[in-house]
Image 1 (cartoon, rainbow, N blue to C red):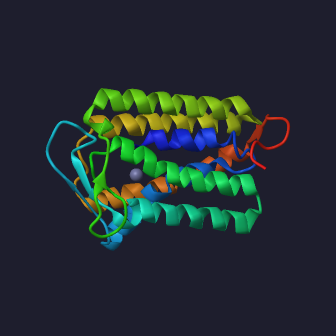
Image 2 (cartoon, protein in one colour):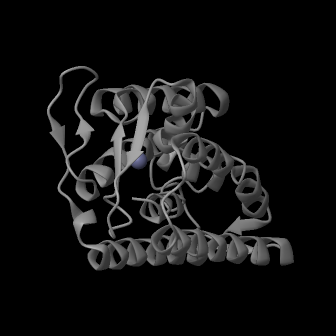
Length: 223
Ligand SMILES: [Zn+2]
């Protein structure tokens, strides 16, 4: 899953209004940011088979970023660091849950390639990806709902807050479509560098989020 994870990050702002959207999107995508790093380090692998389905033509070996046990460790780590820095409990809980949500969504969408733990683990995956149409509908609706929630509970302080958000949304949709219609990446290091490059967008997200204000009134949903 790709923009479905961003949907979680956008919607999470509702539960942790004082947390930067960059933290929420980064948490929901954390293990996809670790994967390219581990790929370039040679700890994990991706390889491509020919085939018309853009989702299932990639096969992964990613026990340290994408096993359930590793994801729990990353979730606790992310929540702990965020708590230590901010003392904002709702933000820490939501960041941790966003990290975990990634595994659940990947387990629903991937073919069975998600390990429960590093080593000789059974592999799980319910295979939403076998249906390209089904995947696009599910992910598209999730993304639209996530962005809608974020846009409904925040408002731009200025033009940067407005154009920043909508240019990011448009870019994500473009990249999603390009990923579906385009050829597979030439090799695994290309996947690694492109994946890491996505991390460079997070400062941009933090920037437009700072130029928007939360309009929710009352106490935080999570105490
Ligand atoms: Zn993933």
